[in-house]
Image (cartoon, rainbow, N blue to C red; front, side, top):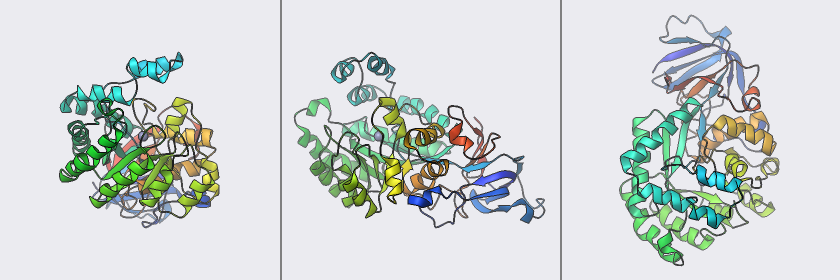
Length: 414
Ligand SMILES: [Zn+2]
């Protein structure tokens, strides 16, 4: 799509095309142009600047007058599990009533119950259930999303999930990257035989996923009570040989060594990070791995918060993602996640906007394509509802501030 947006009150998130992420004090730098225009050709950003420098617009097709409203780069959500069957509000109520984990599992909660439900759901039905979630996040400003498998836990069901993710990418405007997360939990039939399940992942699941070209990344829930650092090493050794880049669930439940394993395997990101101390910060500082926090999950479960402020002050970059999933974060609203970044983690508006756009793009290996307003990147952006400043976006939490959403320069209709 070719077109131009004129009279933009403020064009937010302008970078050089080769900027890959913002770290430390640089996270407070959010470049903007006031009273701006933005044009795009064949779906890619082809120019922007001050209205004062723009000549006649008669040479452009598709002129949109933003009438002083602001334009933001589309959010990039680098960690979700949004393909799932059914929902788990029963578990939510049980948690409110104070039931134990075992009681909740018995009554229909937990990852294994999501796996049971997914097993009973056909591939077409799983697609139909997941599709509205894609349009929901698009309508709230997300233009790129990562989606994980991990509610299958058998070879066939994992492949079923990954095929649904591929179909969502093919049949909707959103850009999707896919992650194989067979090591999300140990299925019931492997209870007490965890090493056999790890062997199944390595010998059967990973080769099949590679053969069918169904995933970009591989993930392991490396934490207390889930998969050990040794098992994670073994899975990642095979995964990287097959060409998958790692993204790791790490240090949500303990100082589990997950961050260090991720760094050792040059993971794109390590995610959660509630248990991050000085040793973990030092390891991350020496790495190319993006530390990613998931405010929705910590908020929803009432858990401790990752020390984001300390990590940024130490010079690290931080990405923030939704963790959209049925058990611990049933929302993909990145505006709300940005608000949580400010309120719960004491991040500044500039920092959360960088964390939810360019830094998440790096965490998905797509920072050359999306994540900021830069020449040659995809024209993925939204015109926001009228607001006095960009800080209003995380400040005014809870409602949708997207007025019009564009993907590759194309206005979406919902
Ligand atoms: Zn997750």
